[in-house]
Amino acid sequence: MAHINIRTWMNSKITIHISPIDRRGMFAEADIKRGDKLLVWGGDYTDKKGADLARENGWNSMQWDDNLFSLDFGGDKDKFAINHSCDPNSWMLDAYTISARKNIKKGEEITIDYALFLSYESYVSDWRCNCKSPMCRGRVTGRDWKNPQLQERYKDHFSPLLNKRIAGLDSKTTESDSK
Image (cartoon, rainbow, N blue to C red; front, side):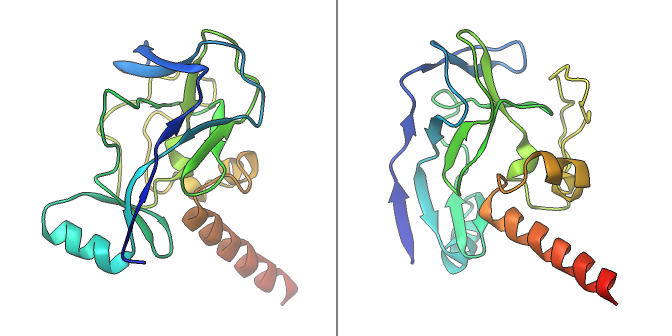
């Protein structure tokens, strides 16, 4: 794979409005059921070689799987605005797809925990979380996926890359427990 383009798709029950969390956000225009597909993050995707070349030329990239990177992650900021929450109502199905983690009522903002896909361990948000959840972590980091409570809460709903890293941690724990 050198370069693929995934078509962006957003559930017709979602619109973008001003958000109390951060500038703009995605909101349910009708009730959405747990498990419903919400969004396919489209855009340009490439392999590691393509991502390295893109970074050399000033592009940003985000890693989703062992050899899958999106280029210029985030795209049109006015078109998609899914805000972070430490207790979100959506999560990942695969490298491109977001689905409802729980039932979402009409008018409710759709949120995702950025821990589900942030894999650069040195990343620490320069913003403070504004989700107001009792589970709020305050700052989002590229190490949050290592938190056992988050691993349990979001089991199998991280990006494919992080699901593999978590499975690797689990297998190391199992090996040491059996010794």
